[in-house]
Image 1 (cartoon, rainbow, N blue to C red):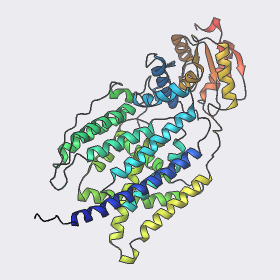
Image 2: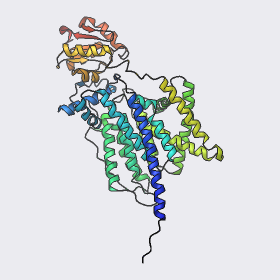
Image 3: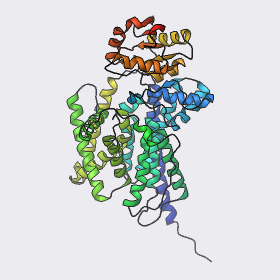
Image 4: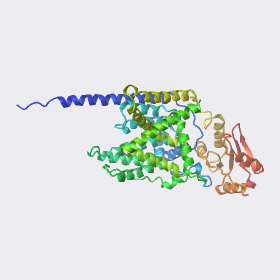
Length: 490
């Protein structure tokens, strides 16, 4: 009679299975709580922004069968910081089904952004598996998910949160292509999903090209790398298109680093006390630095290489370092804080080991509660949904033709909401240079407003040239001038 196999292996598997189920439930409930909170606090309207409009214009063109770049936005090369003529295609592709079934419904698009963000939180639980214990990963996911800054951006139809999703998806799949203790982990599925994630990240924002560089660097810097990926660059346009955003002045890298650090500290803003924010950021910054150095001394991983490449891109390429561009480094910032806390705890007596994390998380909780207490949960007070803005759009649609071209501070939003072509004005010492640009593009109308966004010289220019302009519409925020026919060739 053959002997029965012992039951010990099965017994060993069951606790592991129970542990994974418990982990999955905890992650699920944290993500569910974030989702319920975000959906319950959706805000009506949209700030002026303008970037969001070009993404939606591309999505509309995809749905309506119009050439991708035919958005109505006329690019002004004299002021490239406004934005390039086109954006990469992945985010518009994500918006296209929403536009197809719901039309220009910003709330539906915001719901899609929230769902993508929840997917990001799930990916983070996978990215940092094996790097942090479960309790610290749950803490990291909660800190990212309930971040007041992330909450604010859920109401903006921008590519930053989808980009973060694809970026961390790429990091997760690239990480899975490493060997562990000499045992290959690379699979065809890992290679395929990593290549797809690389494509999606770059196709969402051009700065995602650093992931392709990351692939090459990790291949040559870590002998344990097991797989070679060949992610295909999308046909959205060359990297140089992203560099069209370059400002006309050059800012030194050290000053840009200071600005980036200042913006990063805004993730811990409490809306009430700047000293408290600075103090907490310094504490977290020191912990993150300790964690980063410990990781460098232990093993240079894909996280450290990516951090250096991404931050370096914004330090040495003249792209404005806006707060939203730092959203993608927030999970890594919290990761290094958790790693730094582990280093500190290792040096403490047993009964004190839990004190540092309790103190830091409690301070962050106080910051979050204070920040939310100062937030506006109602509709956007300024922006495209304001009464005066709606009056402007209605006037333009009723009193102009699709062939008319307008000069406006937010040309892409204007084109989206009026289906009229528009361009942005630029500063020049000579008024004649502006008139030359108006004539070059065939502009027929110029608009003053909104007052909080117009560049300081624009009202002065219009006042100096009022004899060449005919006021045809005005309200509390806007004035629409028609260029007099006798002066359109000046």
